[in-house]
Length: 287
Length: 260
Image 1: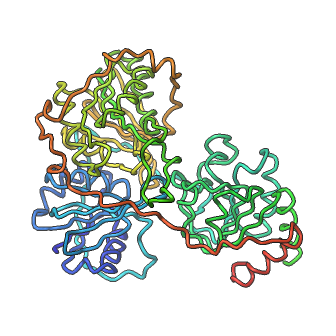
Image 2 (image 1 turned 30 degrees about the vertical axis):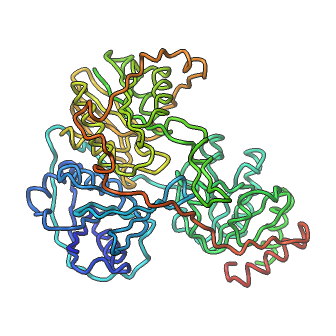
Image 3 (image 1 turned 135 degrees about the vertical axis):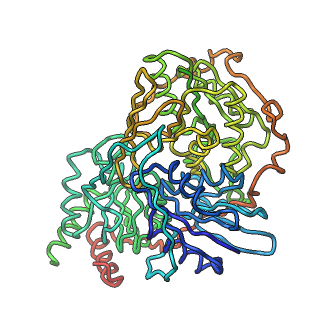
């Protein structure tokens, strides 16, 4: 099937190409980098529409980055074709094309089937592999400047105090920690492990003990450390969705019925106020 | 200023489970609510109306149960709710079809100055309905808005968080914005306040009323074949032996795994 791989991010074009190659989809693929230099997606789409013939493609693939999804919506609405978003899988079969996407906070895959082409698809960035990525010739279109009814006045990178996404080890805390002052005890363990500190949603959104950028889960960061130590975290599916790709998962919780024990490699049932200091002590002594 | 807020009625995602006997995803008989992000869009609309006057209409495509969310939107300060009703609305996946339906409904009501929506739906993580509605209405869309203000002349200054970049934009009404949860702190409505909303505040229209075919199966781009559980392939080893012994064992295991 003739496929166009399009993104406002050049690397995402390569990653999406790899994703499709691994699934034997991109036999006739073209790459296109739509560079939005200060333009909004709506204006980007106008440049695309006037300079590029989209009508010859059966499948138009983008990533699920924010700008890409807006372009995807603009393409689909203008061409009057369907659009499926944030897919984690695609499969060509006799009955049509099947798509898989994550729904209900990471609890389930929604499995979709269509016989309709052309169509637009966005691929979940979480489904992209690590690389190296196969080479694909990538055309480039530049959407500079701005429209008359909307324009970007200024933009700046959002500085992150912490980058959980690239951390090798993470100690994450949840509601099992009774008060904010006790986070110091967790910090000591984090230092002994040379880990980053993460948390579940209640600690950042409800109690506001920790900044949002430390929140692991569906509405927070998606992480893939080699070691993930969940301390006093019950293990809601929304949290699990953020740490599913971790290497080894350890859970410490005093409730042996907590769902986290179904999602961990090693579980310690007990009082975190005893286990954490002991763990810190042994790990510090070992170094 | 006339504002339309796009509202999705959803089941509480934290309560959704696979039925242990049948293996089916159980979506019936669960607590229902307004999708979290949309509450922030309603709040923004109500605040804007207080400042600039006009009307706030909550618009939803849904089955009959979506009337509850529209009543709640009225209790939260919307002037009225409009439901585009379809019995099978809860069992389709097609963000573009939904956008087309919402766009037609807005046009059916002679348009509006501003469309507000949540940046995503919490159940099936749709993020493009708002921008697709804007695209169909041929008006600018500003996504992921964390802060905004509309001036007297209809100019909008907004701050968004897009792909890790903070973007300040200037746009002009008519426009559409999708909002993040950090935009505001939504007010709450009590059960009694919601109950007291007269039914006449929520009107129901059909796909036929907005000039569309009633047969959704013919319109939709995708068929939902099934839901499958996302499993956790973990060892699930519970370490016995209390604090001291357990800790020692754990460290030994983690060394074997090569992660210490």
